[in-house]
Image (cartoon, rainbow, N blue to C red; front, side, top):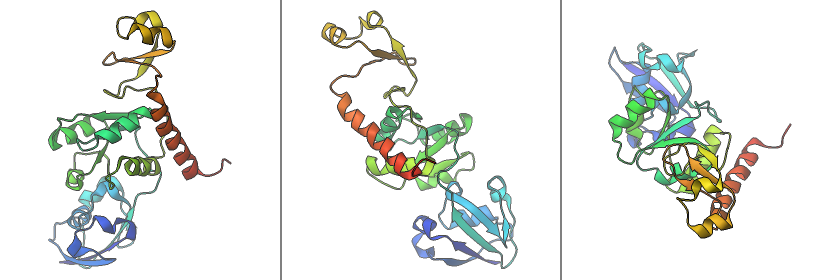
Length: 244
């Protein structure tokens, strides 16, 4: 049977090239669902916000099971920004630089450079994490509770898009850049065995990762990191507009 899909301009870059356009006619099976049609077009359901079938809104949790009729009209729009989220994220193996940026900003960003697609999908579901990935096909997996396609290559652009999409609350300098666990204050004498004597004499404020035990302090390298933090804060202020 034939159905029609109307795709918002903001989502068309995700569509397979041969199907790109505002209005697409598709020949589908009688048992195919609205969610199936969206993914046939090349659009992960995680990228879809408002969606209607014959004028009736379809909630996210039932899209994979919503039946169609001959001639059904499916309208597909992008998700609103900022997008609701759990505050917990999981990044795929291609996003190591973005992971460190997010951890610097205090965001719960899990990352395993050895994880394959199966591991990522299962972990995102088990830990209720939003999966961030450059692999559009990975987001087609039904087990993934929520996700986002990272459309840019450069880390700055990826970070900007993340901030715009999720509008997170920042808590800079509170997470380990290596493992992502929370940092806790550590007295100078407590880190004596982990830092050089000169560092211990020069700096008074230290933190230790509650997970891997690494010690952090604001050394000369922190100037570059401070610039990244201030850039993110300025970006969010711009997105949120004037207070009140």
